Length: 397
Image (cartoon, rainbow, N blue to C red; front, side, top):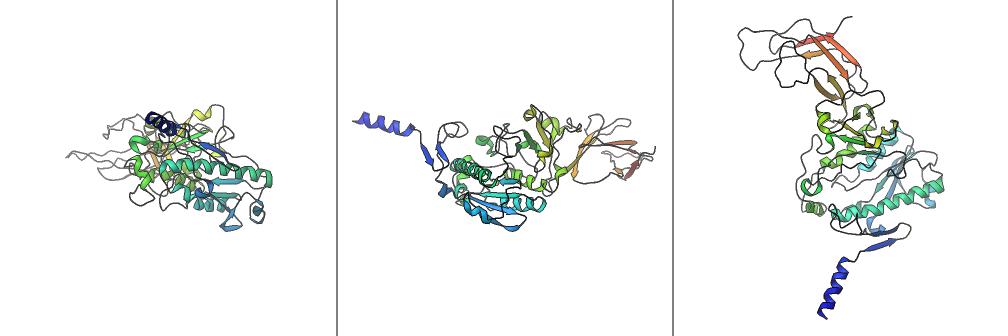
């Protein structure tokens, strides 16, 4: 009897779980949803009523949202079947930052005559991290059901989906991509789309501290017993929101890795080589095999995040010591929309006292703009003493 009971317990422990929900299908805890290194705990998603998914419609006709459902009630909303529809779907949320999808939709409809639908599932996300990740599977099924309903009932064009298996275009912004178990990274580095953007290398974002704590700490966010700074993770939607109005500040440069990009080896852009990260990424022309290309860019430490890139070409010598007659290069990123560069400022200082009080100056400066290869030439005329500013003006023909 004892052996029989033990055997039954073992069978019950390892038996896979499965739940089925009307119109959404069935969900189990098989790999990759459980029993893997990334997801050792196998769970099934909650019932849709417990997840609490809502679809909040924003259009240019309504400043506040209208909640829509996949039924006949949509006929009395401002949804337009002839307009493009955009879905904003959040993942694991940072506490006190649950309404960013609504803010993004508000920004979108200010510039585009579209249906913007903010998908809200606050109830299903305020739980343990592993459970929230599985609840997202129900959310995805509900979004798919809504899209199908809109296509059939409202005549919506199916031009956007959620992964490359059934979409013409998927772009991805990678942030917080450090390992989950050791660095508590909530992002990923794997290729899942046609265009893959890696701002600031895709791991630690400018202006954010490294994630601290253990994976189990995430389960305590919503009960208030522990805090977690999701700065690196939430930067993705913050960049996207700003890109709606500042497209040229998020130019992605094709590069093999983040170190080569940081060393300035991936500049400038060739013709039609550099896509725009964020809202305007779909303007880029895709070619076969493009999904294997990585695109890198830098951002600001705080708003505004957008940056304009330029390169001062020359020999790769950045040791901090200037030698007369040599050339030096440096990559510059500045706030976007600096306009036409009219002059360059040069200043030097010495690390030792020189009683001869020499004068130095920049004799020639080449400034190449990263996004379109345009080169500006500047010529210096008079050297300057230490710590005085030399104004280097455009060269005369």
